[in-house]
Image (tube, rainbow, N blue to C red; front, side, top):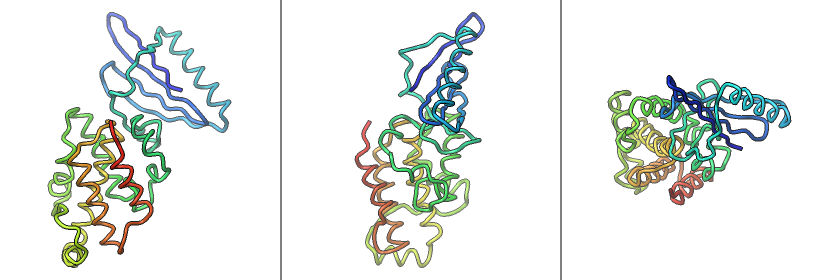
Length: 236
């Protein structure tokens, strides 16, 4: 359940919302109009989670916060808690609702969007960048990150012909692999943070997954196939 509250007086205008269900809840709070800070709390039981969530709500109401039943949870930016990491409740509702497989929150599987070092770093950099620039350009970011920050060569997907890919991989496998991982991590990251996806980035991400599958093997794995299907079926 999501509930949002607003506090406003002559000196300040703040928001606070909570999303609680199961054995955990997320809160997001800060100056109205800002991204704010996100936190996750876990409990041993659903009963304890509900109890603590209601306690927090009562505390906010005593401080003068008023519930806002028209609070816009959709047109917002979502960023994971630094202390907790990947979590559905700190992901955009469109991401959490569409990308339902557990592997989307996996921090260790190289195939998943954010499980590799490259994918994890990409998401962290995206979250930092969008705090500074709400109009951040996601489609241009993979090339910028690879070439400007990592001092490597960004290799866009120009062919999915297996033999051509194997030839390129024999010379520049690391650059190509990192280019692909960063590209699809950026696409998933854009949805996770903003709930939107640039059409050109969707196309590049699908091709990046397909090319990487040929570098690693001869065909798409189940996870790679699911990622492509979910990207192609995602709509705003």
